Length: 148
Image (tube, rainbow, N blue to C red; front, side):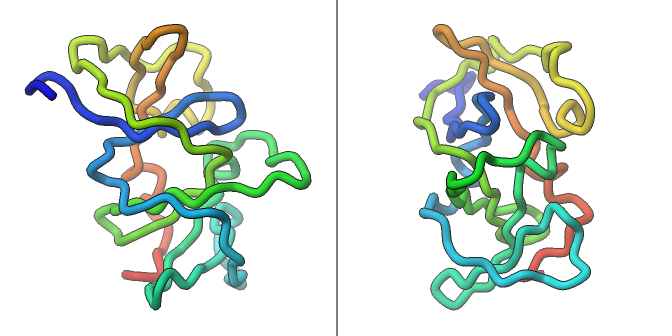
């Protein structure tokens, strides 16, 4: 990896390929039962106990104001480190870790609208794929996390 590239953990959400810096990712785990949090914002799906650590699970579809996940499809937990603590993002599917060249970074495409536009830093054009870089700090900003 050169100074102008970085590793991105990719994942899928409502047919879009998104990614975040692999250094922010703690782990990826299958769906866990969640404990609901009364009076929490709608984007907070609940709390999960991960080996004794209580982690807030954020439904990324709700956070980005995308359609609900189809019935019968369970999300995957993408556990990430943020400035506000460890958070689980509920995503549709995990992709690969890919190397991206910073020189290929572009502004978010015009097709990304609404809340999603504020949460996407930019895009990378890969072979037959558009990788949208998610700003995890913005995703979790203002959401009280269990570990904080």
